[in-house]
Length: 251
Image (cartoon, rainbow, N blue to C red; front, side):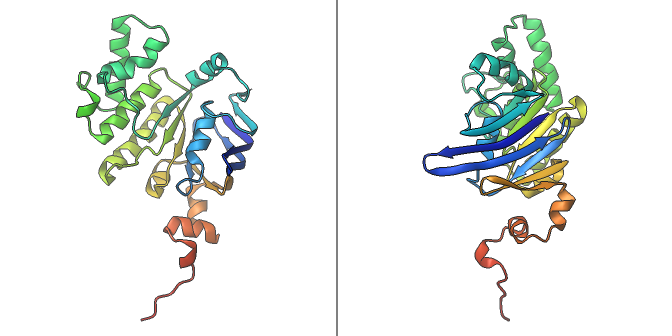
């Protein structure tokens, strides 16, 4: 579905991506983990053309999107939806209007079609009857669900999730993880989940990629990751800073 080749990006004097190579198989869920500020979200934005790299290639279903103009990228963005961290809802629109927005942008004006598709999405998100609510009255988890419904209403081939469980309590976070899995199974959606929540990564991912210092340091299954004896990987999984490695408390 997606292939990234030698992707590099510098912001100011800081090298964020230093030659990222990554493949995402059709229909799989790939979790991208790494430290905060390590470039995960920057990588995600490159995949939909929101940022232009300094070097490298991004192939989506056989098309290299680097150098495409906005009109060409529009075709690619029909294939790839994105869920931003906070849901990125329009505060002045109802739930129904937020979800229907991509259809409006695509030229759909039939109120019956819009209503039917929004109703279907709300059913998928387990939010039946919430059409008239405003974003201000929604919980964090509900905002994520509405944002996700909006991102998949045009049936993209792939959905990108930017920290989907950030700011949520463990119970709500678990419900979002289950929803991501359910969407993969129901619609065959390819998913890329950027997260530093290891429980989420293990719950949703078929494979996991560890982004470290601007490169993919590990790419494999969750079992491979957990069984790795690599000190860098163990430090990350255990939430251990470099200075803690090998430290022992005397009794």
